[in-house]
Image (cartoon, rainbow, N blue to C red):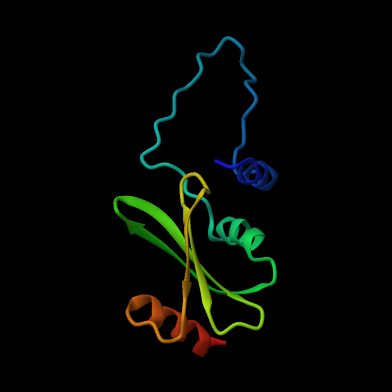
Length: 119
């Protein structure tokens, strides 16, 4: 996890500790059924550092190749292209970045077009 992501998570208070008011009590072990994922807001914040003058288009939490990722779509200022940035949902690491053009086909193109119509 990047130091920026750790700082943001700590600042948002996602990790909270409970003081042990009974020193004689045994510490409890908590078993998580699933790891915590970063929020869409944090994924957007992480990606906006790469493209600071970009407008947010859309974000989707997706499971690809067995791992959860945020697909964040940003439109650079003055461009007709959309930048798709993949953020690993458990660590906040950027794992891929791809430029999408209006002439592309497939699900990603439909998502971009839907986001534009919703504005």
